[in-house]
Amino acid sequence: MNVDIGNALSAVAAPGISRAALERLDEQVADAHERIDAGMEAGEHGYAALNLPNRTDTDEIRVAVDRVTGPDTSAILTVGIGGSALGAATITDALNDADDPEAIYLDNVDPDWLSATLDRLDLETTVLNVVSRSGTTAETLANFLVVRETFEEAGVDWTERTIVTTGDDGPLRELAERHNLPSLAVPDGVPGRFSALSAVGLVAAAVCGHDLDALLRGAAAEAETLTGSLFECPAYAYGATTYALDARGARTNAMMPYAESLETYAEWFAQLWAESLGKDDLGQTPVRALGVTDQHSQLQLYRAGPRDKLVTFVTVQETAARPIPDTDVDDLAYLGDASLGDLLDAEFEATEASLAAAGRPNVRIEIDRVDEFELGGLLYGMEAACVLAGELYGVNTFEQPAVEWAKKATRGLLGGGEFAEAEAVAEKTELRVER
Ligand SMILES: O=P(O)(O)OC[C@H]1O[C@H](O)[C@H](O)[C@@H](O)[C@@H]1O
Image (cartoon, rainbow, N blue to C red; front, side, top):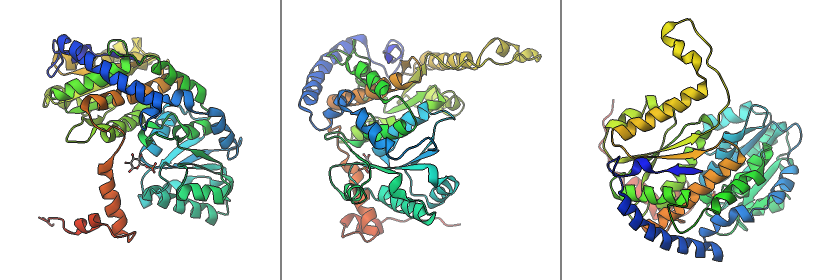
C-alpha cells in the first residue's frame, strides 16, 4: 500500500501537523520501531502477530479444510465474533464472487436473524467453521450449540463438516478432540484482532478457494517496509499521522474505502483501532464510512461539522471496466463518455479535494487492486500502523480489559456465577418517559 499524508499537513488542514513536527515525531517513530522490532524478534505477546506472514502454515490450513469441503460445498458458516470473525469476513467479502461458496458470519445472537439465516441454507453442503481464541465466548458457544442442534434436527452429521480454530485448551479444544474434528490453533501471542493472517482469518478464505499464499506474500512485502522512519514506511506514516492528528484534536477517524468489497474492512479496522488504542482515556474513535455511498450521508458533517475528525480514504487503482451507456438526454451526455470506474475515481478525487479545500485533514491509502496480495498488505499495514500508534500513545495495545466488565455482567445475569458486575446492572439510574 501507499500512503499520502499531504492533506494532513498543517499547511493544508486544521488540525494538521507541520513538517517540523513530523520530523520530530520521526525520532519517536525510530524508538518505537526498535521496541516493535525487539518484540517481534522475541515473539512477545502481540508483537508476534507481525511475524504471521512468515509463520502461518497454509498447507496445514488446506489439509484441515479438505477434510470438510467437497466440490458441492455451497456455503461456509463461520461462528465467531470480534477478532474471530472480522478478519475472515474482510477477506471473503473482499474476494468472493458469485461462483464461490457463500461466506456467512454468525457474529450476533439475534434469534430472528440466526433462524432466518439457518432456514435458507442447504445444510448438507454447508461447512461449519467455529472460531474462538479463548474457546469460552458466550455468543460464539451459544450460536454453535444452536447451529449444531439445527444440523442434528435436519439429519445432517455436523461432525463431518465442522472445523474448529481455537487455543490450546478450553471447551472448544475439548469438543474438537472428543469428536475428532479437524482443528487448527490460534497462534501463541496473537490477539484476536491481529489474527486475520492466521488460521483464524484464513480458513473461510481457503474454503472459498482464495490464494492464501498470495495473502501472506502481500503481508510479507509490507513487513519488509517496517523501518525506523515514517518517511520510508507507509504503515508507520499512517500510524504516526493518526496519533499526531488525534493529539491535535482529530479525535475521530472515519475509515472510508472507495470499494463496496472493502466495506467489511472498515469494520475490521474499527475493532483494531478501538480495542487496541482505546484505553487510559486515550484513543481515536474509529467510524465506518463507505465511498461513494456516504458522500451522500456523512460528508456534510466531515466537511463542515466540528474540526475533530480525520478522514482516511482507501482507494483502489484498478477496477472492473463497466462503461456507462450513452443516452440522448443532453444533461446526462457527459456520463456516456465515462465508465463507472471513472465516476468512482472522480467522486473520490472531488471528495478528497473538497475536504482539503475546507481545511479538513484526510489521508489517502492506495492499493493497486482488490486481490489477495494487496489485501494481505493492507491488513498487515494497518496492524503495523496500530502497533506503532500504541507505542506512541504508550498504551497496552494488545489487551482489552474494558470489554471484560460487560462479559462478566452478562454471565452473572444468566446465572453463570457470582459477579459483582451483574449486581450493578440492577442499580441503573432511571428517568423514564413513557408513551
Ligand atoms: O476469539 P474469542 O476468544 O471468542 O474472542 C472474541 C472477541 O471477544 C472479546 O470480547 C474481545 O473483546 C475481542 O477482542 C475478541 O476478538
